[in-house]
Image 1 (cartoon, one colour):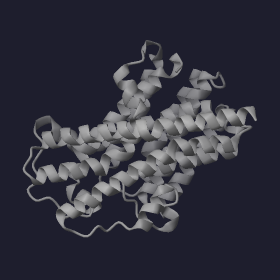
Image 2 (tube, rainbow, N blue to C red):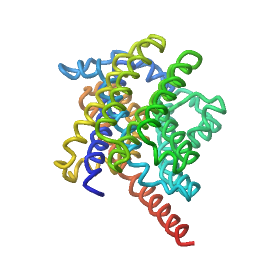
Image 3 (cartoon, helix red, strand yellow):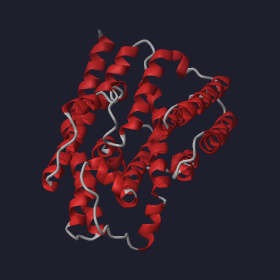
Image 4 (spheres, rainbow, N blue to C red):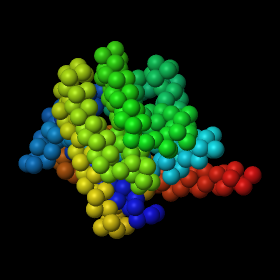
Length: 360
């Protein structure tokens, strides 16, 4: 890894931690009737309160979660151009598929199995059909089949996959964006997002608008490649920073957590830029580098699996901190297993295929 992007990898490790804590210290507690319904079990009775400052964090957990998601998007926009060979578009998609699908299918299957065990434990019907599960395996195949999202987190993967497809179509043009094209693309995304907010579901509008963060990541790559200046990056960044509140506050329908969602994205933009400025001071921290390495399997597996663990523990009268700690440990261990057994071999396989294709 070059010194130029060590800072980005470090941020990815931080982002993984923030997303996990947002779910385990926040979402599970403030949205519990909905979370129980999502898992297909009765709501918890006498849900305990989080102690002290943790209750304050829980009330603002969407900020932490969307900060992590925002960082993931910007980092993806920054690093993906390093993987694109405009002359080998299908090879790029093949390697992305090997990166995404084996881990997601394995993680999603494990999560569904954990929900099946939870249903057995509660003596209720397991309501997730095989067709629902298979529709999720393709990630972007879920919506066309009219299947409701089960895991609650795959919306970000849908954004990433469509981003890859668009980059593949654009090819070298996307890698050679100048300042004017960046501005035009950001305005185009904002217009499409505005229309989507009005005629489609709120989350679909969010997905479209999130494309601005991916393009912002591309702009950072363009700065590193000297295709734009630092001043031009500032203009691009200010434009995105202004369009986010315009879309969320003036265009989208009011939503309970609009301010938090928007604030998380804006915080991600600010922190990413601050870390970019001081990127030369970043060293390869082993802990954060490890968290970055397992960030994808952790993201896939942690939410519903961890919720199921906390559900059972809380129902048995175990304190919230112990339940959260157990969920964190279990999710971490499962992510490490998937990383070692599924992700690393898949990445190795994709690289071997890439080298064979390059020498063919």
